[in-house]
Image 1 (tube, rainbow, N blue to C red):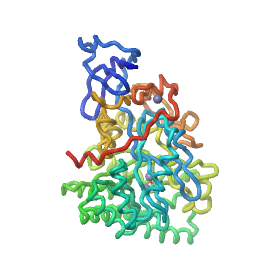
Image 2 (cartoon, rainbow, N blue to C red):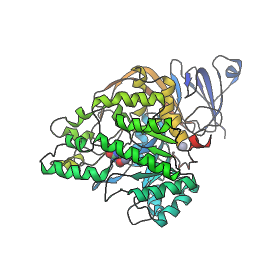
Image 3 (cartoon, protein in one colour):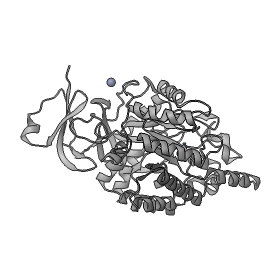
Image 4 (cartoon, rainbow, N blue to C red):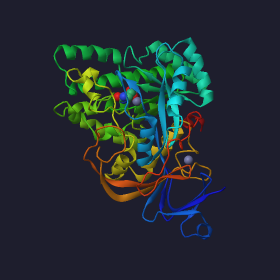
Length: 468
Ligand code: URP
Ligand code: ZN
Ligand code: ZN
Ligand code: ZN
């Protein structure tokens, strides 16, 4: 049976356009858009009409970097696919790309199948996977080809975390060469983990155990150096490169220099680097542990370079790196030794709002908001057209956004399964009102109406910045 939904009277914003238009949805997809008040729009009938007067009508957010249930530091990220995707929906995100993890000594296949199983039937919104490579060898290199064909078209490598996820330069080069041949995109955690581990040990020997030392040992120069090295290795391999969670001005400069040469080098940053700083890591009574992630938060001065990079397209994507650990019982594992604090911050629910606040604050335009949060991540990871925009044929993943509502972000009111908010008490203007996922209303005027299992696995194509 065909169901038609009409979203009427809102300001439709995409990465390319802003128009007062009505949106007709049929069978889970956008059927048509027409100017509000036009004869065509007036002729449309629907089973359900959503009044979006004075609201924005935007594509559902695409969060291309989440870690639901990630095993890390002897514990697991506290959001499951069920709780994490429900929180994402609350925050106007309708697609996540999560990281399946290869365990050392195991195949990519085993890691990927475990992730399919974790997510299956649990998700409120659509989801896809990247693959983390922890063990680059002849077998895993061959497996990469098969994964690309299967719709897992991006692979994260780590220059950090020796003994856990770390790959050496030879392994990185080989994986990049493979990606150059099979159309995959290498995503890099760019920090010199070998040097960092020396500094960690020296800091602990000096008795520097508080969370703020996490930020001090993971030096800006070691992010910039690794970013530079990753770019050179990608050039040697003839492969494109996407650097994840860029936090330092000097790393943005490396990306900008590469892009000025015309190299296919891309960068992502996250709200925590745009809004938080080493001041948070220094909060007393171990509260700084709430802000321990890698790359680490930086001194506030770095934020201007990140915003500039987002405006000049030296950075293309803002994703959350959502990797929540409760303060009680999880972050506390690192009391007396910052290196034992599980790395990661919650944020999947807050990204669209924080970036809208950036529009209010004048850092970016409304269209750039939609670009960095929806269109660019979709395009980067082979989902654009289906996701990331509002156009005929696209999945009807739509957010009705109230740009004037005010809210205070807090653990008291958020839906992420974590006992603190990294944005506790922050006032923002703008709020998600209604969310559709493939035409179904999953948040209805700030009431959750979705279902675990509505979200489907979505295989991806290759990076669309390279095809056109
Ligand atoms: O601290 C972080 N970012 N935790 C998640 C793992 C990663 O490196 O992305
Ligand atoms: Zn990382
Ligand atoms: Zn991550
Ligand atoms: Zn459904």
